[in-house]
Each structure stands twice: as structure tokens, then as C-alpha cells.
Length: 314
Ligand SMILES: Nc1ncnc2c1ncn2[C@@H]1O[C@H](COP(=O)(O)OP(=O)(O)OP(=O)(O)O)[C@@H](O)[C@H]1O
Ligand SMILES: [Mg+2]
Image: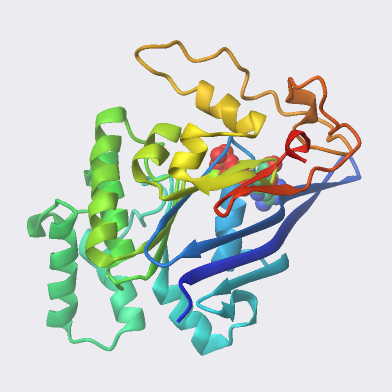
């Protein structure tokens, strides 16, 4: 059994839309390669629109046309037959950003939690209820709340329910796409701790997506920094936080608020409207010697676990 549960090679996803009769192609994910090992938390960080959610949708086969390859447990996700796809969808679960939209408002909590078990497992009613009760208690809620509807809960409680739902089928791999960004700070901390506990208890492998580097520092084993669809730097948590190389990684790290230091005044929304021929970060890069205007950077290995896509490192 390989220690790599997920292997992504040269993944590309394009969205094609039109504006005033002109075809617009967005390279939402561009030549992304990464591996996630069994049992680890791999985090993806990057600003809004850089392709984080598109990457997670591609992994769970919610996107029809991709280029490159995504292998889960050694099998190409886009080549799975019907029964393999059913098993894959049981093993891989997702927690979404918005706990208000991700739970069906017309269903009671007990039915929301029971649904995956009824569809995927041939269990008696009492066994389904036993699992539902166990999961709701594990996320810090109680049996008496199972008869309520989603609107009767707070945002933090709804995210607990979404986590319980992701756990009912005992998944191997969970993708959490900005699971706490819709919650206030104190509730965020509770949910992050819950995710950490659940990960340990169930020995889950995780892809954790967030723009909040403080959360990532607390949770992640390895990190990928994403910029305009590309992974510009990947490394262990210590490599990214203690020895960042890409100017974009440094910019993200310098913008973390800290009680001892004001965050740098950087405009993180300053995404170029037209991409240069070479490095996508060129227009925001402060390195005067940068060759990225015309030349596409290639990945350089800084250590067996640390890679950077930057002309400066070539
Ligand atoms: N269905 C779609 N059709 C066309 N373009 C899309 C579609 N979905 C996303 N995009 C575009 O693809 C790019 C990546 O979007 P994506 O949602 O993956 O970013 P993200 O990193 O998850 O952003 P956020 O942090 O705001 O959630 C953006 O430019 C976005 O506008
Ligand atoms: Mg997103």
C-alpha cells in the first residue's frame, strides 16, 4: 500500500464563459501537482479566486473536463466505474464553507445525518439511529437536538452538524473548504479544535483549504501556496513559515496580524487583469532583477519536501 493517498499530476481546469460575445477562458487551476500522504493534513492557502475550490471540486469529480491526472489510492478518479465511484464518494467527504447553505433547510437533523447511511449502507433503523446519535454527540451536540431543523441552530452549531454528516460514513479523506471562514473568531477556534480531534480519532487524511495562515499554522503538516491557479511554493509547515522563498508566500506571511507587529500594508486584491507571458506574479514582484516578465519559472527543489516556482531561485 502506497503511503500516498492522493496523487495529482499536472492538473489543469479551465472555465469557458463569454462576455459581450467574446469567449473568456479562465485557467482556474494550472499545472498543479501534489501528493497527500495517508494521515496528514495538507493545507492550501491563497487569496480569493486563486482556484482553491476548483481544485477541491476537481478531486471529488464535480468538474467534467480536466487535464492531467488525479489518482486516489492508486486509481484514476476520472476513470472509476459506477461502483468504484460509489465507494470513492463514501470514502471522500467534503465540509463546505457556508454552514447555512450546505444543510437542507427542509430536513430534520436526524434525517440529514441518516441520509448517507440509508443510501450507502444496508442497516436496520435502530443501527442507523445509533450511529446518528453517536456522531451528533461526538461533535458536541445532543440527542434532543436531532428533531430540530437547520434554521434552529447557530452558525457554529450548523458547522458541527456538517462535520457530523461528513463523518457518518467513516471517511478516509476529508476536504474542508474554508470550513471556518463564515464563523466568528471564538467559534472558529472551537470548530478548528473539533476538526483536529476528529482527524485524530478517525485517522483521517485531510485537504484543508483556508486563506487564514494562522489556522493553517495550527493544523497543517504540509502546505501549498496557490497563486492564480498555480502552486507557487510547497513545503512542510516549518519550511513555509520559517523559510519562505516565493515573494507571494512572504507577502501572505507578512500580512498575518500579530499583536507585536502591524501587518504589512499590502494590497492582496491587486490581481493583474492581464497575465504576463512569463511569471504570473511578475507585476506584483518587487525583485528588480526578476526575469519573470518573459520567462516562465520552473520548479526548484530547495529540500526533498520544499519546492518553489520562482525565477529568482532558478
Ligand atoms: N463556474 C465557473 N465559471 C466560470 N469561472 C469560474 C467558475 N467557478 C470559478 N470560476 C473562476 O475560477 C477562478 C477560481 O475560482 P475558485 O472558486 O476556485 O477560487 P477560490 O480560490 O476558491 O476563491 P475563494 O477564496 O473566493 O473561495 C476565479 O477566477 C473564478 O472567478
Ligand atoms: Mg473557494
